[in-house]
Image (cartoon, rainbow, N blue to C red):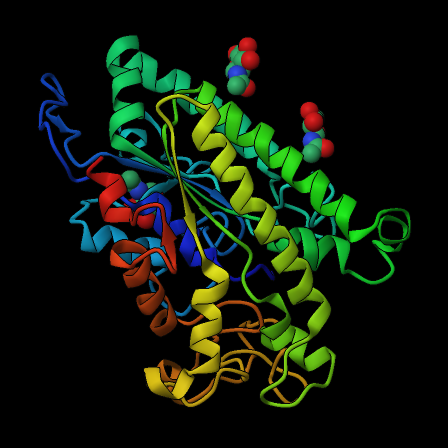
Length: 352
Ligand SMILES: *[C@@H]1O[C@H](CO)[C@@H](O)[C@H](O)[C@H]1NC(C)=O
Ligand SMILES: *[C@@H]1O[C@H](CO)[C@@H](O)[C@H](O)[C@H]1NC(C)=O
Ligand SMILES: *[C@@H]1O[C@H](CO)[C@@H](O)[C@H](O)[C@H]1NC(C)=O
């Protein structure tokens, strides 16, 4: 079901396998090569890859693309898959869940969503397994030096919580946008700090995309081609400004940690605004979906109508970017400058 924008972004982040330095992480008996490092991926449908959480794009996620670029041999395996056991977890695990949010209450209309708190609990389980596989000291070194922690979360807290009519009326009446954003950031600080306590050091955290410009929002609000819904974008920008401050605070306060900020909002907005320049024919209409002028009401499914050229659409479905858009986004996260990724890009983070 619906999630948000950066999904690929997050996956991207996590997928970032550290291809650098010391090829010394080889477990002799199993001949496991850990020189490429690992990606541990957290977040919402923008980041989730493979079963059981499902993919939300027509092709590769940002994470997949980044992993390929960096020469990683495996995609991060989903935490809940039955075969995610033993040495496979050393190549990375994907905890991201469609519908998941920073707040526990987010996405409660979806049955199987896992909130960020639970995703961190699951990593704590993985963490103990890694200790068993590598021994405590090597495990710590592997996590701190060669593992990238990618977090793409927050969109659902707005789309499937704060902005949801009826269900969230209570929250919206009792909480101003300011205090809701405050709550989100306080919880995220606690979640990132827990990951740090579990030896995460290289983080990439995506901000919330222009959620007022997705086909779903444009359709239900009956907007024109070149318009976006202002409240969702305003909330995203408010959250994003505070997220940047939070990451700077954590960079100063958590010794040895690097928090990289991925500016998904500006990146996706650039694609939407100048879509023709990037070879797209529309940034409004979902390729797969139904309902309204932008095919933005009914999620992509087996009976959906499908566009004839998916590479010409910025949006694959009412919520998520297409693979073609993901390729452009991934490239900027990997090698881009401080407009989109700061204080360093993913390649630099990996080589740190
Ligand atoms: C886990 O199982 C899935 C589905 O059976 C398969 O596609 C995937 O390649 C397996 N992953 C590993 C690491 O064995
Ligand atoms: C979510 O629920 C867990 C218990 O299941 C609790 O420990 C945690 O503080 C809650 N988080 C939020 C953000 O409310
Ligand atoms: C990880 O789990 C252990 C219990 O097994 C608990 O004591 C510890 O506080 C947990 N750590 C975090 C950061 O959640």
